[in-house]
Length: 428
Image (cartoon, rainbow, N blue to C red; front, side, top):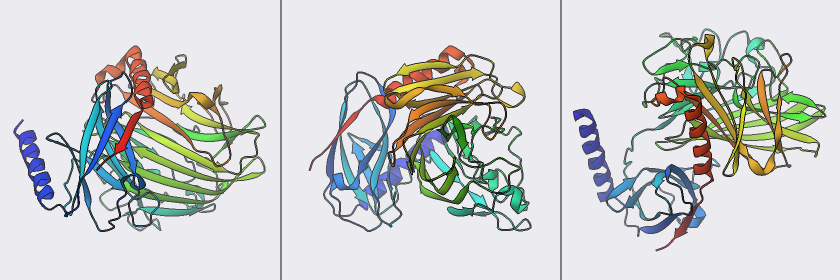
């Protein structure tokens, strides 16, 4: 209790100090209106810079004040031009609640509690230590098997919030894995490397923070994707023993890492699938409070005969898949001993847009993409598809995930909350 009290006092003092250091810029009134009949906890809201009519380019930090409280927020530079593009915040709403907040600016970082994080490390040779990095370019012949060593810490980037963690196999496989978290703190920076800085699989054992809990195999994991073309499943990427990628060039970048939002970007150039070449932009975003992440994919080169496939690995699953409509989403839900060696109960789900959902198929047991349920979604050229991937582990902060009905209710309630629309009005 004392520790929490000291942290609260320290945070309040920091915010007050930053408020005193605010630049002489007139505050902006922002009205946020929950248009739904639902309570919506920890709702993510992104307000475009153009809506705020802000011209300042100097290093500033947003201070959002609602009554006597400060709402944690951050600025995101999404296009990498050195200027922020959106104000991102997370806040709670009661049914139909209207909040009027005042946006002020500070030259001092208010140091909000860190509730999201990205970790990425790489090495250029087997005998070199891993170094932290924020971006990477991977050519088709630079995959794990061809190099002869694993280049990346945890096989690629990890991202997390205060509830759960995930990782992406950047080494050519492009699968999505799950880190079960037992505590809200961010996981240690040395997960996946040893004391000498060498890549080491040390996260398949239990630590105080948790561990990697989800077997992926030849699936695309939780939230990976593919294209269905002429009844053939085309995987984005390859498997462990393949020496040449079907993507000519992969470009990864950490777009933003902040207290309430972390964003990752993947660009896949000349993905060869069924004789066609596609250009893919993928954006992954995570914010506090949710046992999951948001994924957005846009594909250039769509001919009209393709179907987008959003994947949920069903390795170790022995129970029927539940398909439930909730709000704007169709929820594909499974709940079983989905973890390594069937040791713990894990619920997983993907939430896909109801408007473009065309049913699902099951991947084969052999081939380039196996052991998965694949939600079929209509796809248009250069049009974004956004969906969510959810994971609830019985050893997480919410032990009720052990119960199948509870997990299903969590997923469908979350889908309705994600569907809730927040009106944003900018005043003076």
